Length: 162
Ligand SMILES: CC(C)(COP(=O)(O)OP(=O)(O)OC[C@H]1O[C@@H](n2cnc3c(N)ncnc32)[C@H](O)[C@@H]1OP(=O)(O)O)[C@@H](O)C(=O)NCCC(=O)NCCS
Image (cartoon, rainbow, N blue to C red; front, side, top):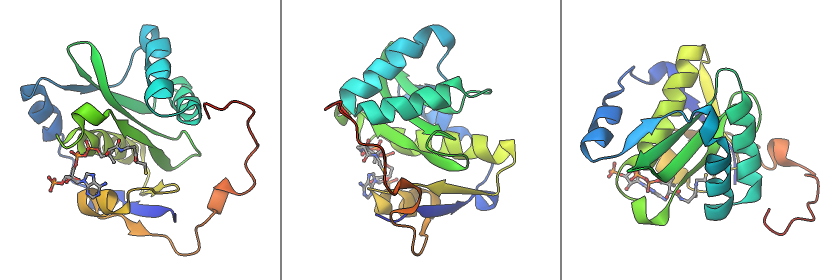
């Protein structure tokens, strides 16, 4: 799938989605140090080792470039940026039981607004698997001739989890 581009300068500095999710019992925030292993293990178990590796990069960035969604100490979803490569959004994942509740959109916006505050003008969404989600939520547009983009000739892994 092609990469997509988001015009961060068109995004309103509106963080109301955090309060809206809080009302529904879901906290959107950055993970803290002692949560690192639980955070990465959850991503590996629910999505893939490759996504956990990218989340590890985001977790290690200073400042941290990832968010999670938590309900009653249970992780519902996560999202990262500056993980695949600088200026890239992703990966993002919401547990199946929590999908369709606005959590994915909230995690996406938290990352994109954080990027905007950091000074980025655009965000790239790499190797998009759900283009309608990004088009609908943040008016992302496909980037022509972006396949395979930076994903060309990846190192082969011997780990079946990846
Ligand atoms: C894609 C994903 C992150 C969306 O998270 P979610 O919490 O279910 O999405 P939300 O509830 O925040 O949806 C926000 C809006 O996008 C729409 N939407 C969600 N997923 C969509 C999809 N796959 N295609 C089109 N629209 C979608 C919703 O209908 C909603 O619209 P509304 O605001 O009009 O009600 C989630 O389905 C997921 O984790 N999928 C598996 C991992 C994955 O594919 N990640 C993306 C890789 S590029």
